[in-house]
Image (cartoon, rainbow, N blue to C red; front, side):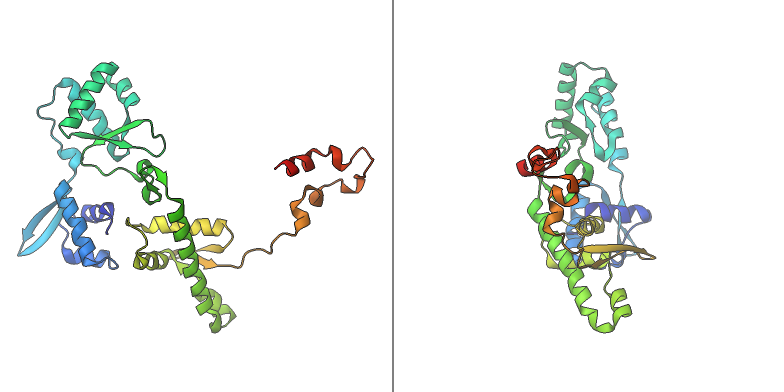
Amino acid sequence: MVDVNTLLDLAKERPSGLSNEDIQSMIPDARLEDIAETINKCLKTGSLELYQNNNKLLYKYKDLSKSSSTKGLDCEEKVVFKLIEEAGNKGIWIRDIRHKSNLNMTQLNKVLKSLETKKFIKVVKSVAASKKKVYMLYNLEPDSSITGGAWYQDQDFEAEFVDVLNQQCLRFLTEKAESAKALGPILSRKKSYARVDEVHEFISELRISKVPLAVGDIESILYTIVLDNKAERIYSDDGYLYRATNGLIPSTGIIKVPCGICPIQERCTEDGKVNPRVCVYLTEWLDY
């Protein structure tokens, strides 16, 4: 499925209207049915409006936050609504609403309940603080900093999903490096690097994700592979490039023991002042 925010960003860039052909050219790797599904979703929420010009269908962006009407709201509801509207898609804590509106808790809860019932606002759970309520306008899509993005499902971190993505991204880099080996040392190294959009296309074709993944999501996964010392990253005119690596030589066993890197090991004896029985570092290592 095509990301809603991606489609809306494209519509913002074309205030005169966005055609189906424009969308297909701007998102070439998206399927027609996925594009249609996202467009229908935007039309239902009102974030896109449909026009016809010279027998051609055009989609125009509509800013819901600016078009929201406060008709029918009393003074207190308008004050609270305005505070929530200003918070945008990152929302606002109930404590901040109370502080800025100067309403007592009983009044504020009554106002918030009324705005929810009228579908002016909604409550969104935040992955940063599950017990706190975040309020935003009813038609807004929450920012990824609130929902956690693709890595969270109902506020739970999807560790298995991230592991699968990690493995598949590394697989792509490894296979690319293997296929380039026969080209000679210099060309082989150059051809073994992959752009983020190449990896993104590969992951999209696998269809292992139930939610649409942005290029930035895949870049985050690739960076974890770099941190795991399984790939390297360089910067080029096309942005960051990634290449699978064999990693460093594993450390020998003695290096993992405090004695292996102890600066006074030559003074350590069985019955001396420095000995294994009184060594705090060895004791902590054994306890761990």
